[in-house]
Image 1 (cartoon, rainbow, N blue to C red):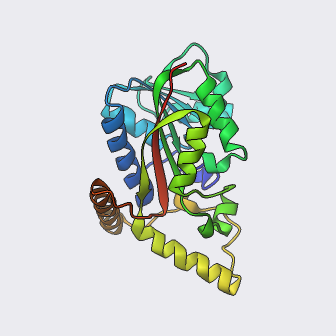
Image 2 (tube, helix red, strand yellow):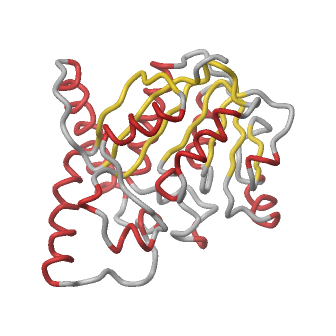
Length: 258
């Protein structure tokens, strides 16, 4: 959950949006596939640490979670919600010293950064990110779908897979894998964006995003099942080199040595 979305529910994981649950499951699979020996993970733009906390419960990894919206008060409160001592919380990446990370997660983060290329290069140039470190990146897809929803969440842009590949490639990485997910949600967002542009209708000014979810366990379970099936089908097509567009885009890359 992004801190912009719902600070009142920031410290609770009992009403997680299906989108977050399924994205977590997908990220776990990507991590196991592309860096199964991961030990130290840097989670930039961690929000309420839902992903970091979940990964720690299932493995022995160490995570440094960074979010520039953290305050000392939020960090103090959040520590009591988290699992053990395997997670460290920081407001800024510059506050991290004497640590080496073999994995970097940027999950729906770089669209919030005005100069995304400079931010990636800063990470890649950092001695804290070891040569060969694996980057797991997810972003919202397709600039044509940019809407008031994106503006409220502080997005500067949306990406295609080719744009994301070009960005990371020019920043100095080896691209390993890329594609889309949440194809079923793409159609809903196309209709929503078309409605907004056609009738000049705007969403309310409050920022909800995935931070508001109260549909009950049965509906939640059904949607989670459908979204997991969505990703499974998309990945099956990808195995035969057919890339199906989706609402989100992902990319796996590796920091080059030197």
